[in-house]
Amino acid sequence: MSVMEKFSERFGKNKKLRTAIIILLIAAAVLLIASEMIKTASENAQTETYSEYTQELEHKVSDLLSRVDGVGRIEVVITLQANAGSNTSAVTTVAQSDIRGVVILCDGGDDIAIVAKITEIVSAALNIGYNQIYITKMSSE
Image (spheres, rainbow, N blue to C red):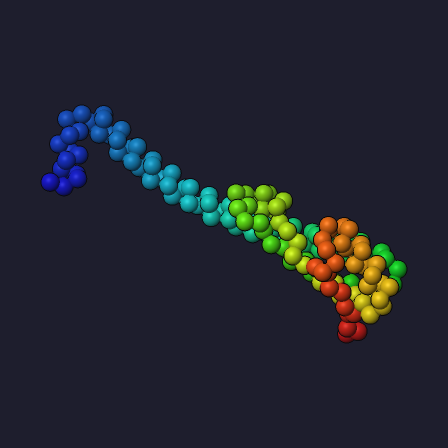
């Protein structure tokens, strides 16, 4: 006996009950599909937020360092790594991200005194160790 035959046999006489069950099954299917779509949208938002956060940090560090005498032109790249288990939401992921490294290209990158200043400033501003900061001279191109 097929599922439909069993269903008709059991609920065939009560049309209201049969209609209610069919509506509930359809609603459950719609909810499953919608939850998958929301999950995908949330993952996309998380990626965008993560990228925006990195860009914001890079801009702030670049802006801060551009005011230091002797730095000159500057470009900053920051690498983040999210902590394990922080995938519950985009905000949580960003808030629990670790700065893995900072690369700084600047005109003053060949001056040891400027490099020392930049290292101190970036270390203090981002609460990272000196070993996570790399500074070099920007090419003249």
